[in-house]
Amino acid sequence: MLVVTGTFENERFIPDNPISIPQKKKVIVTIEEKPHFDTKPVNKWREIGEAILNCDEELNDEPQTVQFRTMFDMETL
Image (cartoon, rainbow, N blue to C red; front, side, top):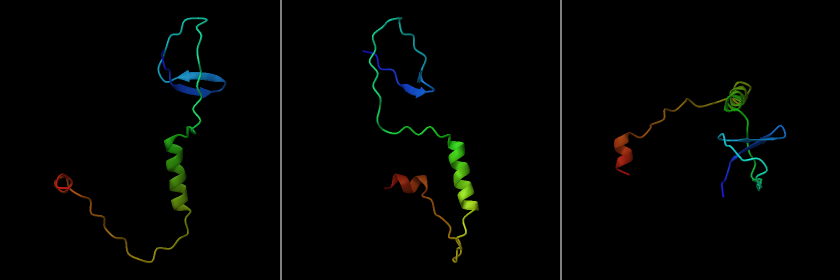
């Protein structure tokens, strides 16, 4: 059995990788029920940026610096 993954778009199945299937070959199609989010990452980042720019929340405190762990710190965990 061969498993082919892909997406269904505009009434067509588009495989993730090119595949050749012989004509009149019997196939079984399984539809995943989990949601597939096909929004482009650029649009999501644009939405986040616009939400930040349009936010009217006032910040009362001074910004605090963030301390990232070093590679040495990570190795000692």
